[in-house]
Length: 132
Image (tube, rainbow, N blue to C red; front, side):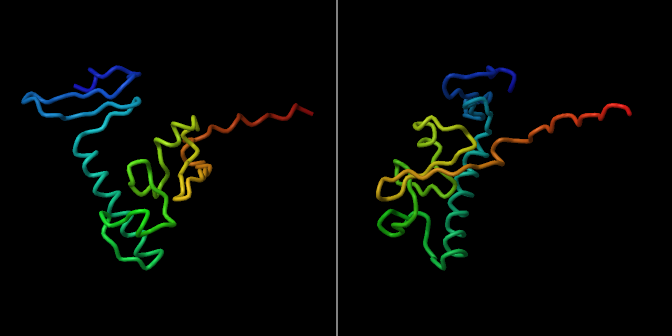
């Protein structure tokens, strides 16, 4: 079933089950099961709520988090908190995947380097000293 997705899609592509229901989404070379996407959204909301409670002592529901209620937090174009960076902004700025970008409520763009996004780096082979 997954082999039906091309290796380099130019846009979002979908794969449906035998009943016609959406089952997989293929986007930018990655394949996501629908349950994974739904779960990620719910988990992200929970992570933001837990972060605010743990780090700032703010007990607030995700739906109540806005630039007006938490003015120091960054938000994307749609008003969603960008706790871990704004992928759309990063892409608009043509930044590599190992750079996070956010925009504060004053409109300033902040970037940070994310070394773990680069993946494992293979060390060069050790040089053998010449024989003596």
